[in-house]
Image (cartoon, rainbow, N blue to C red; front, side, top):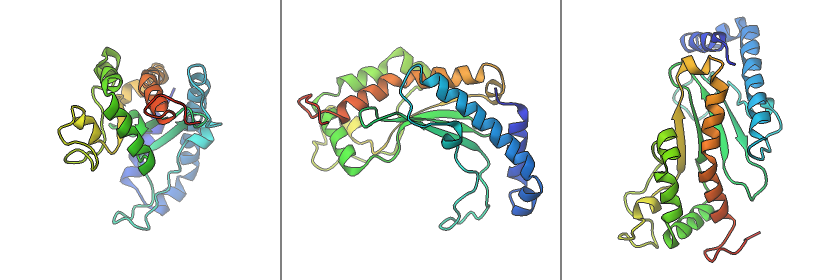
Length: 225
């Protein structure tokens, strides 16, 4: 489980986001960073019972706390959250699992943040041929209860090359395909925290399996690999 000390550190760094404070509290940061790595290690072990995860360890999963400020107006040097990502293995299993730990803003998520132009075109072509499988997933009780709805940036109308009056135009407009679920801090700091994260990750599988299937087959259902 994640202890309250992880959240205490994140609250402090939000108020003291400068190198002097960070360097003076480096040992505390290392302790909390290691706690998150341990949490991620456990997630990977347990997720491998339900899926095939290629991320080898929590250390490889958890992102650095240092911000890239080269092109940002915000010059604060550190993130005010911990987060990690676990990829599914091989080109046949698409998608990945993300967790975000931030006081008052904890959530888990997954999906396709920045699909390549080729993949996005292929996804749209497959949806246009038969949108029912995706609609069934998005309307399922499990999806509605856990994630409520599909998120992501959209075009104002159907993309070029597709009929703007297509019955699936609402789905074809998506440029990203994201699913998220907020988790209260109190739950993340309890013994139920990791179970809630795992439950959310497992609920993503029908969506990931659908996307993996359409990204690895042509519109006739024939394998691409």
